[in-house]
Structure formats: C-alpha cells, structure tokens
Length: 357
Image (tube, rainbow, N blue to C red; front, side, top):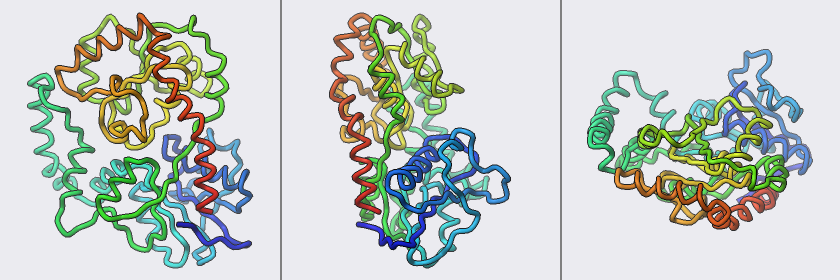
C-alpha cells in the first residue's frame, strides 16, 4: 500500500492543538521527518482552528508550517490520528487521499464511547464494569484486572453485524504496533505498519550511563497506571517509587539515568514511549500483559518480566524487584536484545515512511 504523490502534492497532518502527549508527539515527528528528511511539502492542521497559538511550545522548534484549511484535492494526502474528533473532522473531505493512523485502538473506542453516547447512556453501559471492578478490589485482585478500555473493547468487538473500526473513504489504515495490526485484522481490516522512533537524546545519554550511579528507584507513569499497581505500591512502602510527571526532557533523562526499574502496569494502547526511553537509559522493565505488552513483537522482553494483574503475583513481582536491586548488572543484561531492537526502530521507521510516501 502506497499513497500517490505528485510534484505538487501537499500532505496535511491533523492534530489536536496545543497538546503534548504521545499521539501529538508521533504526529509532529512524522511531519518533521517528511519535511526534513524526505523533502515533502507538509502542513499541520490543528483543531480547534480558532486558537492564535495552536502549536505547543515543545514543537515550535521543529518549524513545521500549519494551515487552517485543508486543500481537498486528489493529489494531496491527509494523515488522520485515530482520535475520534479528528476522524469526524476528516469525514467532510471527499477527494483527498486519507491515511488513518491507528496510534491506539483503545483510545479510539474510549473517545467514541464518550462522544457518541449521552452521559446517562455512558453510565448505564459502565455499570457492569464498575460492579466487576468493585468485586475484584474487595477480593484483593483474585481475578485478572479488567480496565475500562478492555471492557469497552470487549463490547465493541462483539457487537454483531457491526464493524466499529470501518471508517468510510479511508485509503490506507496505518498500524502503530502489532497490537493495532491484529486488532484491526480481527475485524477484517488490512493495515500497514507506521511506527515511530525514540528521541536521539535518549540514545546519546544511554551510552554515557555508569551503572555505579544507579539507585534502588522505580519509576512509573501515574497517568497510565491501574488499581492493581496502586495497591502494590501501598503494600511495599519500603520501595522508592517516583511518578514520572511534569518532567522536561533533560529532567526525565536525569531521573531515568538514576533509576534501576521502570514499571508499566497501564493498558499499553500502543508502543508506549516511556518504557522504551527507560530501557535505553538502562532500566529493567516490568510490565503487565495488557494491550501491546501482551505481544513479544511490540514489547520484546523476557516473559519473566511480564505479569498478569492477579493477587498471587504481588509476591512474585516483589521477588523480581528484589532480585533486580541486588543483582542489577546481571538482570540488566537480559534487556540487551531489547535495547538493540529499540536502536533499530528509527531505520525501520524511515523505511516505512519511504514505502508509504
């Protein structure tokens, strides 16, 4: 699958305005590569369009031009993130070539659920999930944790005679990870890979790290956590957990250069950046088995570092942490192939872009 480009083709990338999260980061990275490395004429299209300064301060240095109007011609290309409002915006354009970039099937289903249903209907749909969640917490996670994202996916993927992922007038579906690829495949939607790459600053910093400076610290992202992980933290007050939030690039590199472990018990909507960045800065990675973390192709780390969110695994996780803290160089060696995998991602990403454009 490949877009049809002409000498006068223009590429438009839809992006929510003034936001700096994983999705907008991927969208800006793609636009920058298309402009800088592949010499394409590319523009950001921010929404809402009435903001005076729609570019987040972290992306201004990239100097990617933006337009408030998408030129709806066959020669042009429109890249659409799976974010539901962006998908809805794209539907009014009938001629332009469209690529729908599935950065997360989970977020698409969640935002579709939010935007398409009245608040009363949303509350009714969520009742079974709330009951299951309360029972599981009362039983101290005797059963595997069921996140809202997973609950919604179970509902949407099993609606008979309806394909929630089939969007009209999409020329190419782009899968950010294997998790997205097989989820789309399960609904008979073919896609082609378009991943991303990690900021080179992490690669440079990783080469300079001395293991002597590593501390018995565990970092985690509180925005992508779970009730299971929160309980684990409470049960282990002697361990130093540091939430990764509000750090700029230099501060984050400094923190992850000191920590020994990065734990991610979120829902893994795609190939999340923080675990990869932490791995390059010589952290051992411990995850659950949700979303992309369930697949070796997305998170190729040893099975001994992946855990189901069940009560019986609290002790096993603690044992693994103690082992890492005590024998860090030996345990870190088990992530050598993962770091090699991450270092090759930029070349793979460039090849993917070259094939598509």
